[in-house]
Structures are given as structure tokens and as C-alpha cells.
Length: 234
Image (cartoon, rainbow, N blue to C red):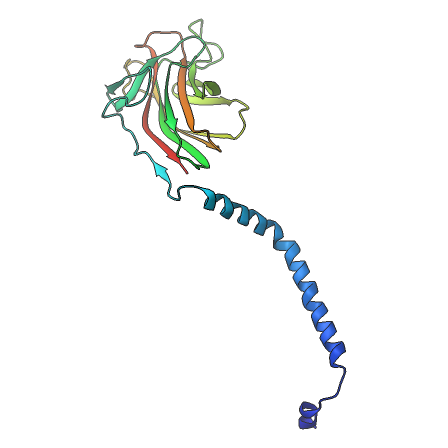
């Protein structure tokens, strides 16, 4: 009986084929609906990367400022006990206006830019709401292309940030050390180190990163600096 089945050549082949084909087509349509969004995103990413005139990531070696300020404008370098060679210290002003900066040339086709650095808070910068008449809400201020993007209130070197609504900019800040004297200009007051990352997409050909410090005392009492600076364009 089994051999008769295998040797049989008659039957509704057309009907069977139609059902099978319809099932396969239906499965294909269902699969397309699930994966089409991801395929479009992936193809767009591939297209953008193929259009870029360079394929490797562009790095600048982390700058420990042992060779001076380089292309930074409005600031020098110094050797600070406990910190080593740093960019700064920089004295503040009451409104935290931009006092030093660097212009960065962005490689053609770069889709993303990142700045990484240690932001150093020296001595009696006080970001408390009330500071017994000596000043309040003091701390570092960051600028991008001349526009303020973030402002910090510093309490013993521990920064609390207020970010602007500038589109496409991501800022992360992590406390490395605070509320202790590390070695700033005044040995009586605590210092702070905060590791900062600034990232944004679709950069222009030139980008200016700048800093200010909202503070109302002398360089010996309140100041800031930068160390271990890295620029990355991708």
C-alpha cells in the first residue's frame, strides 16, 4: 500500500501548490512588517557612513598640559600641588562670562564630537543658595560657540549642574573627588575634581568650547582649572 502511494501521480496538485504558495507569501508579508523599520534605519546608517570622506575615528592625544596651553586662548598653565600640570587656575567674575576657550577644526564628514576632561574646582567656590554675604551660586560655566550650555553650583567641589535647552547636546558629569583639600592655591579650603563629557551630533566645520567661572573672590581664594583633556570626532 505504501509503494502505491509513492507511485501515485494523480491528485489535486494545483490546489496543494496554491495553498502552500499563499502560506509562504503571507509569512513573507508578516516578516516584512516586523523587520522593515530596522532595515530602513540600518540602510540609512550604512548610506551615511559610505558618504563620509574618512572612515577612521580622529583622535587628539589626551592633553595633560605638561607642554603648556597649546591652542587655548585667555589662559595659561601651572603646576598645582596634588594636581600636577593643569590649564589654569582661572579667576572668576560675578556673572560667569566666558574667559578662555579653544577653537576646534572638525574633520569633514564627522557625525559626532566628544570632549572629555577633568574640571577642577579650587578652594572656596561656594554654590550654596546663601553664603553669609560672601557670594552664592558660584561655580564653573561651560560655553559652546559662545552660548552657555551648562552652569554648576559648587559646594566644596561637588558640582550640581543646570543645563541649557541647546538641542542635540548631551552632558555628563561625575564627581571624582570633593570636600577635601587636594592641593589648590589655598591650602585652607577643599577642592574638587569632576569628570565631564560633552557630546553632540552634526557638528559644524569649526566648534568653540569655552569656560567661565562665576565667583567673586581673588585667584588665591576661588579659581578653576582643566586637566586630562581629550577631543574626539567620529
